[in-house]
Length: 193
Image (cartoon, rainbow, N blue to C red; front, top):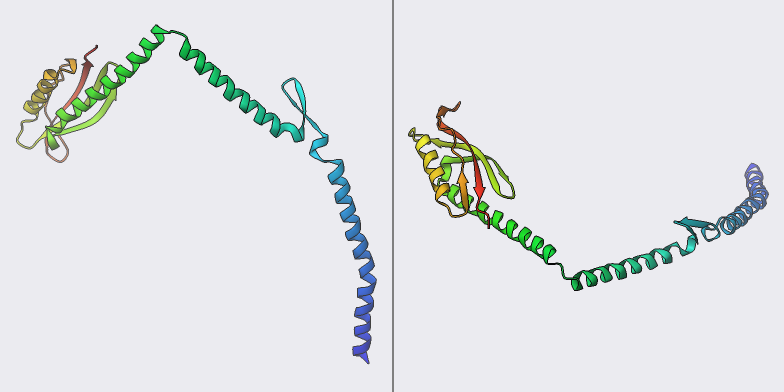
C-alpha cells in the first residue's frame, strides 16, 4: 500500500507543479518578446558625424561610404595621371634609381666578400642611401690577416660601384681561441649618378 501512496504522491506533485511551470515559461516567453520589441536596435539612432542614423541603417551607411571612398580614390588617381608633374616624376625616378643602385652596390660588396671565403666575417652592415658602413674581422691561421684586410680594401676600391673606401685601422689581435684576426670598420661611398 505504501507503493501506491508514493506513486500517487509523485503524480499529485507533478500535477501540482505543472501549472506553475507552464505559467513561468509563458511569462518568461512573453517578457522576452516584449523586451525584444522594446529594446530593438532599430529604434535607437546612432550619431555619425553630424547626422543621426538608425542603427539598422548603419551597415548600409558604411557600404555607401566605402563606395564613395573608392570613387574618390579613382578620381584622385585619374587627376594625378592627367596632371603633368615632371618634378614628381623625376623624384620617383631618382628614388627607384637610388634603390636599384643600393641593391647593385650591396650585391657587388657581397660578391667581393664571397671571394674571401671563410676568412672574412661581417659583424655589421648598414646600408644608407649613398653609403655602406661595414665592420667585422678577417681571420687567418697563417698570420696573414692584415695582408688579407689590405687585399679586401683594394678589391673594394677597384670596384666601379664605389667612389671611396675609408682606410681601416690595420692591427692584428689574437682571439680567445688563439686565431689571429684583423678587425676593421669601413665606410664605403656609393657612386652617384
